[in-house]
Amino acid sequence: MLYPGATPDTQAYLYKCMCQPTLTHGLECMSSTAIQMRRLESVQGRFIKQIL
Image (cartoon, rainbow, N blue to C red; front, side):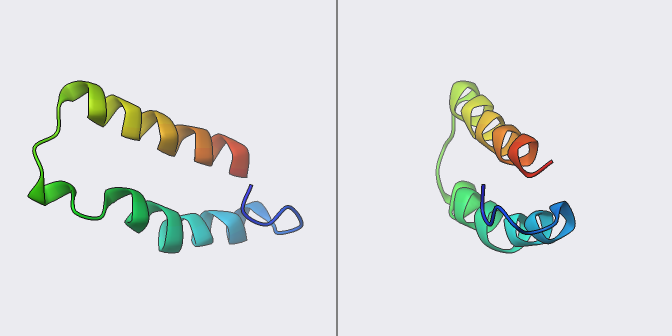
């Protein structure tokens, strides 16, 4: 996913530092529907599965 040769620990760290903030930036400023929140959780779940 992020870096194919990196260990899962390194990829998880990079996800927490780079991907997650990008995905959640500005969420508190906008009104989100339940469907949009489920989509966000789905994307995050796919990233985590690819890391592991």
